[in-house]
Image (tube, rainbow, N blue to C red; front, side):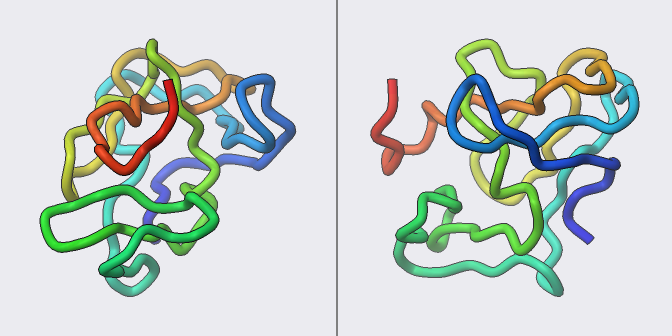
Length: 110
Protein backbone atom coordinates (compact mmCIF):
# COMPACT_ATOMS: atom_id res chain seq x y z
CA UNK A 1 0.00 0.00 0.00
CA UNK A 2 1.47 3.34 -1.08
CA UNK A 3 -0.92 5.70 0.68
CA UNK A 4 -0.52 5.38 4.44
CA UNK A 5 -3.49 7.52 5.49
CA UNK A 6 -7.25 7.44 4.89
CA UNK A 7 -8.25 9.66 1.98
CA UNK A 8 -10.99 10.30 -0.55
CA UNK A 9 -11.05 11.71 -4.07
CA UNK A 10 -13.23 14.79 -4.47
CA UNK A 11 -13.61 17.74 -6.86
CA UNK A 12 -10.69 20.10 -6.26
CA UNK A 13 -10.63 23.89 -6.29
CA UNK A 14 -7.02 23.56 -7.51
CA UNK A 15 -7.50 21.29 -10.53
CA UNK A 16 -10.02 18.61 -11.52
CA UNK A 17 -10.11 16.05 -8.73
CA UNK A 18 -7.89 16.02 -5.67
CA UNK A 19 -6.97 13.85 -2.72
CA UNK A 20 -8.50 14.86 0.61
CA UNK A 21 -7.74 13.70 4.15
CA UNK A 22 -10.55 11.72 5.81
CA UNK A 23 -9.04 12.29 9.26
CA UNK A 24 -6.49 14.64 10.81
CA UNK A 25 -2.88 13.89 9.82
CA UNK A 26 -0.15 14.96 12.24
CA UNK A 27 2.97 16.73 11.00
CA UNK A 28 5.70 14.19 10.25
CA UNK A 29 3.29 11.37 9.36
CA UNK A 30 4.26 9.36 6.28
CA UNK A 31 1.41 9.96 3.82
CA UNK A 32 2.78 8.10 0.78
CA UNK A 33 5.71 5.76 0.22
CA UNK A 34 6.77 3.94 -2.94
CA UNK A 35 5.66 0.32 -2.94
CA UNK A 36 6.74 -1.80 -5.92
CA UNK A 37 3.72 -4.07 -5.37
CA UNK A 38 1.40 -1.12 -6.13
CA UNK A 39 3.42 1.54 -7.97
CA UNK A 40 5.57 1.24 -11.05
CA UNK A 41 8.50 3.01 -12.68
CA UNK A 42 8.24 3.82 -16.39
CA UNK A 43 10.82 5.34 -18.72
CA UNK A 44 8.41 7.98 -20.08
CA UNK A 45 6.00 10.18 -18.10
CA UNK A 46 2.45 8.90 -17.77
CA UNK A 47 0.41 10.48 -20.63
CA UNK A 48 -2.37 11.35 -18.16
CA UNK A 49 0.02 13.35 -16.01
CA UNK A 50 -0.07 10.89 -13.10
CA UNK A 51 3.68 10.49 -12.66
CA UNK A 52 6.79 12.28 -11.49
CA UNK A 53 10.46 12.03 -12.35
CA UNK A 54 12.82 9.87 -10.33
CA UNK A 55 16.45 8.84 -10.87
CA UNK A 56 15.62 6.11 -13.39
CA UNK A 57 12.38 7.20 -15.02
CA UNK A 58 8.95 8.20 -13.76
CA UNK A 59 6.94 6.88 -10.82
CA UNK A 60 3.34 6.09 -11.66
CA UNK A 61 1.36 5.63 -8.43
CA UNK A 62 -0.98 2.67 -8.49
CA UNK A 63 -3.44 4.15 -6.03
CA UNK A 64 -5.23 7.43 -5.34
CA UNK A 65 -1.90 9.24 -4.80
CA UNK A 66 -2.13 10.14 -8.48
CA UNK A 67 -4.73 12.75 -7.43
CA UNK A 68 -2.32 14.77 -5.27
CA UNK A 69 -2.37 18.24 -6.80
CA UNK A 70 0.37 20.90 -6.94
CA UNK A 71 0.57 23.82 -4.55
CA UNK A 72 3.30 26.40 -4.09
CA UNK A 73 2.45 26.13 -0.37
CA UNK A 74 2.08 22.34 -0.06
CA UNK A 75 1.18 20.43 3.08
CA UNK A 76 3.42 17.50 2.08
CA UNK A 77 7.19 17.57 2.29
CA UNK A 78 8.60 15.75 -0.71
CA UNK A 79 12.00 15.27 -2.26
CA UNK A 80 12.72 14.06 -5.77
CA UNK A 81 12.99 10.31 -6.03
CA UNK A 82 11.37 7.53 -4.08
CA UNK A 83 11.54 9.18 -0.65
CA UNK A 84 8.39 9.02 1.44
CA UNK A 85 6.04 12.00 1.33
CA UNK A 86 5.43 13.24 4.86
CA UNK A 87 3.02 15.80 6.27
CA UNK A 88 4.95 19.08 6.46
CA UNK A 89 2.43 20.37 8.99
CA UNK A 90 -0.77 19.17 10.59
CA UNK A 91 -3.39 18.46 7.91
CA UNK A 92 -7.04 18.81 8.91
CA UNK A 93 -9.73 16.28 8.05
CA UNK A 94 -11.33 17.43 4.80
CA UNK A 95 -8.23 19.35 3.66
CA UNK A 96 -6.77 18.68 0.22
CA UNK A 97 -3.38 16.97 0.29
CA UNK A 98 -0.87 18.83 -1.91
CA UNK A 99 2.77 18.77 -2.92
CA UNK A 100 5.12 21.07 -4.84
CA UNK A 101 5.73 19.72 -8.36
CA UNK A 102 8.17 22.46 -9.33
CA UNK A 103 11.28 20.28 -8.81
CA UNK A 104 10.16 18.03 -11.69
CA UNK A 105 11.53 19.30 -15.02
CA UNK A 106 8.77 17.43 -16.87
CA UNK A 107 6.06 19.42 -15.09
CA UNK A 108 4.76 22.23 -17.28
CA UNK A 109 2.81 24.18 -14.65
CA UNK A 110 3.41 27.40 -12.85
